[in-house]
Image (tube, rainbow, N blue to C red; front, side):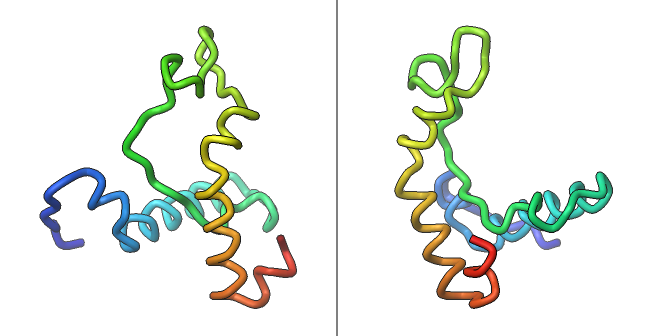
Length: 95
């Protein structure tokens, strides 16, 4: 793969090629682990900000606060579902 220059990490996170590369790697790991079809991620969102205790996404024992993460990423989750439903009619059935 060619090395691309980005002016910021945010620019990299928004590049569809970066998202596709992460999703492809996740698929490869999933196939190696013999996951079932419904266990594979269908879309990803890359973000700059890490999960931290300070932003309320982690507990003091470094576990993800699922309800808070769901609320924090509600728009991104909705956008991924919308993107899947418009790009792949078969994917809508699996939602």
